[in-house]
Image 1 (tube, one colour):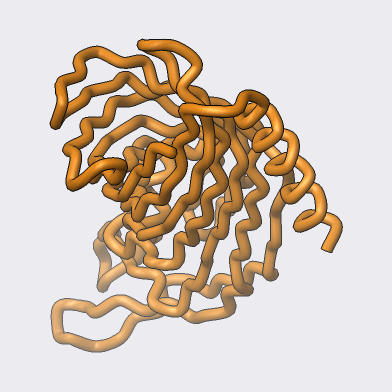
Image 2 (cartoon, helix red, strand yellow):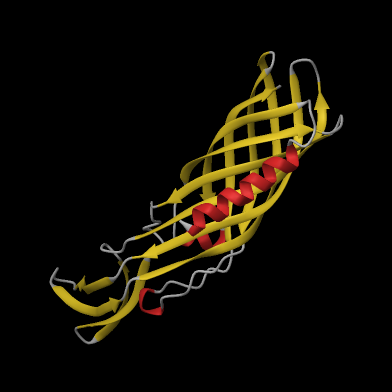
Length: 235
């Protein structure tokens, strides 16, 4: 409850900041696809999320708006979540890559941010903008306990013991700063509604601890590539 109240307070402050004037308001929403990159991609595959925003055009080239967003990663990168073990097969040591079939983990993220669209071109029907933003994100990563005996196959197809791994459940979460940078374009559907698409790099400055028994390295920043599509209304 405290986390929800804190996020609501941030959203309220951002909203008051961007609607301090009396005209040229903008508002809308987006559906986004967040694709992890860098070390973060070793844990998760992409996921969908959504956002809402409200703001104001302050000049011909600058539009500021406050945005809230939510997304959750729960599709694991199974190709990367493996362990490497050396096992004696007969009289020869062989190295095996073993999948972690029973491994479970998920991460959810709430965010509130201030963003600016910097206009690059504008016509009656089209516009293009560079987008910059910074904000505060609450994230929680839950890594379920892992308790499993791992086996590999020898040359005859028999099971050979490789390792026994037991790792307790771990939940990490906190408020972290983050930023994004990218571009978007808009096409007017009818006045005052615009269809927009965009892409940007997003980074949240958080840390996930390593799990050496699972061959999982430390992740110090959650980096991702976001593509989005939505509607913007000028009012």
